[in-house]
Amino acid sequence: MVMLFSRFLKDENGATAIEYGLIAALVAVAIIGALTQLESGLSALFNGIGTRLTTEAGNAAGG
Image 1 (tube, rainbow, N blue to C red):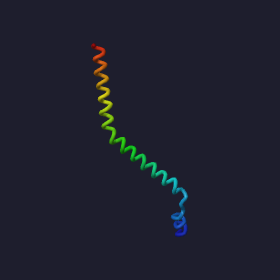
Image 2 (cartoon, one colour):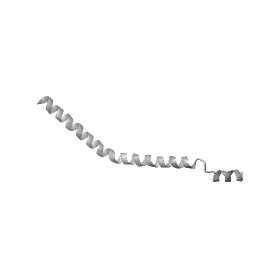
Image 3 (cartoon, rainbow, N blue to C red):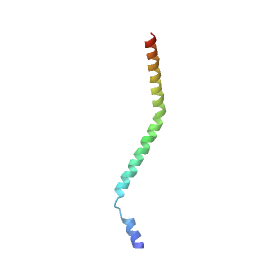
Image 4 (tube, helix red, strand yellow):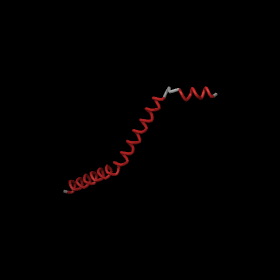
């Protein structure tokens, strides 16, 4: 049993795939964090654009 456990600890098959998976997860967390920080600014920007378009459309229809 000890020999089997020792061989398991020394076996490095699949280690590269796990490392790439961890890197991909880290990149995903960074992207999600960046988008979360940008969300409020982008939301305000698009709300402002929508308000201006609505106002201008109302002015064009009434004028």
